[in-house]
Image 1 (cartoon, rainbow, N blue to C red):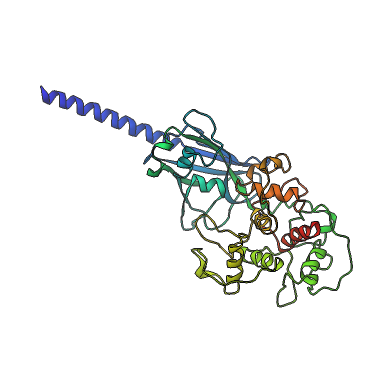
Image 2 (spheres, rainbow, N blue to C red):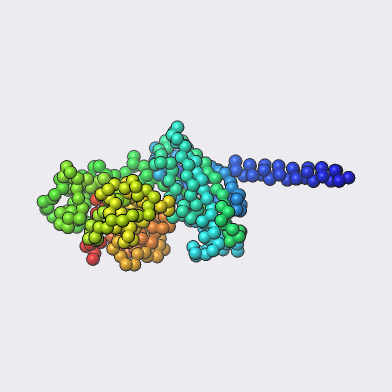
Length: 400
């Protein structure tokens, strides 16, 4: 008799196990997030849209499929989160990021992505939801081009870590994933330049300023800035104040993108901070160029420069427009941030603004040291040229 009961229990157990396994497999196979890049600017897909059930130790697999339907080749730089909502057990959105349940959930939802582009070595990266909300998720070592009507798959695993504990039970999230394009537009379609940029043939970007200084005749120490839209800005900071240097061949190279170490050096020089030597806590400090070490240390000590969530500074990385603005605001203003809500409706690409930088951008806009491009965008994740970086600082100096 007991043997019959044992057999029955075993059969029931196997049926439940197989059913659950089959259900999970179906959920994983069907979990494809389509991110369609279209000519009208659509480039997002929904994350957690299917009500993904998460619990400590539970993981789900899926694919983020980026398909190019724009009609031309595009370059995708990264994936950003937009309209992120974390809801508590009661179903209400949690707005306080210090809330115990919010932190337990956001800090313990981990994404592992696997990317392979055109035969390149597969690229793996792990990041928590909290980190992803603050910084776009890089795709591979750098950007990748996708031809028209082709797609790239990014395989991912999402799981809740054991550290979530009871505080994260019943908490859920919803977000859109935005594909961030290089320059926020493919270089094949550069934005229309204002008339003062007509001779600037090497740079497809335009100045973020709407008001130019009055044109004057200067004798420059740089041989490549005559008739450049930022000529007066560069002259003031380089020739009059001596705060920026050129290159050995006498050029300033205004259209060259500026990296994080160079940006730190310029700001430290403008503030006339005493250079200090010391050991930073950045994990990549052994790879800093010797000239940059005191500037990075000084900028970090004074709260001007910060590292990334992985505790690297990445001095040679080209600084993004929002990172540059944040560095400038931290350097020159006591009240560092404004209410991000004040930016609503100002720029047409506000949906890709990283949450961490919105307050700095709002402050910079209020102080009239930044503005948008002619097409109404700001492109916070695009690179910033040496000329653009200098122009923002000079507008601050002029205002103060």
